[in-house]
Structures are given as structure tokens and as C-alpha cells.
Length: 107
Image (cartoon, rainbow, N blue to C red; front, side, top):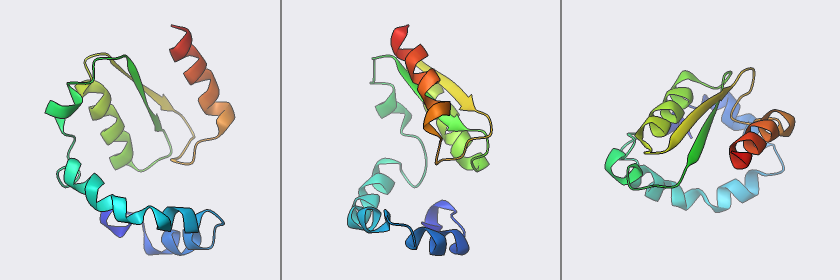
């Protein structure tokens, strides 16, 4: 978690949450994620092979690095769209996300 820039106090708070055990159980997969992402870089050649329409959504209150990663990923997709949800973080509220998904899937 610190590798991707999450401050230690935030991690401490996350560990106190009920969902922490589930996250911890899948933690070994992070090594694979890091390998695919080439040390946090978007694998443009791999992403370019995704030919179905996709929407990549970022939270306007998320760290700048996460917002930029979402934008760059959307730009690398042949049929990608980028949406920013103002005031939302990585832990987006369902009522903010739902209208964007309805719009995307209805198009």
C-alpha cells in the first residue's frame, strides 16, 4: 500500500475496517498487478488490444496520481472514455457512480 503512495495513517485506519481481511487475502496478487503495470506504468500496447467500449472513471477528490492513471488508461483504449466524478474519492458513492454507468451502458 505504501508502494502506491497510501500514507501510513490511512493504512492503519484501513486495517481497522471490516473489509480488511478480504483485502489482505488477495494481497499476494498485488505482485502480479505490479508486474503487469511495469512498476506503475500503463501497459499501452496491452491496453490498446481492448477493442470494446470502456469508461474509466476517476474521483475528483482522489490523489492526483490515481486521476492521471485513469485518464491515461482511457486515452490508451481505442474506444475509451474518461469521466471524473467531482468530490468523489477511490471509495466512490453508489449514487454518484450509478448515473455514469447507466449513461455508458445505455449509449
